Length: 220
Image (cartoon, rainbow, N blue to C red; front, top):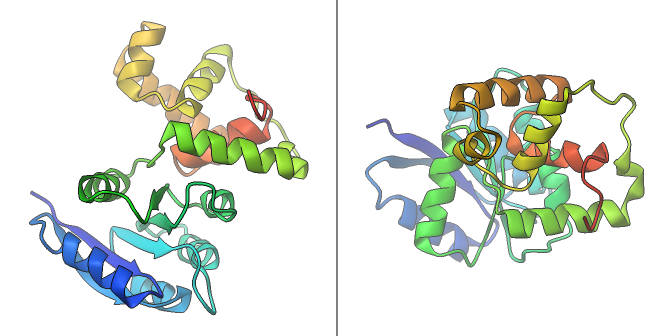
């Protein structure tokens, strides 16, 4: 069993200690560092090269968004970022996802939800809760219409467009394969091509691209 190496960064010491202590109870998770702001996060990732960085979104000095951008600016980094937020409609969540975070987790999440999120993101997948994530993205694209267009629209095939819409609605690879009557391998091929064409790091950024490019209309 491989061990997930994680860093936890939150300016609230009680919250940070709570997450660290909970993660430390798991045999497959090792907390290799903890910090109180974005600068700590950047340093810890560079120092320890963890699989996962669990970051609070609102922190003094350098916040979680700026830290995420800095951490993921290195194309060679293997660290994934999971953002912590206090409320499902936190105004900064969209920016965090756009910066490259692989998902977000509410601070009042249950212990099983926390462990699930950590393991999903560490495995290279996106932590997307469709009912919350779509509402977030829809809201902020409605309020920030300038984000609705990109300089170039990728040339997606009809099948790639279908797959993108299903990804944006939270379908898993297995669900997509069953719905489109194709193999799981074919789904993975389409998704990899989508990521390349959209310049997306993972499913979270692919969802944002689906909205920005107008494949899904805000409120739709």
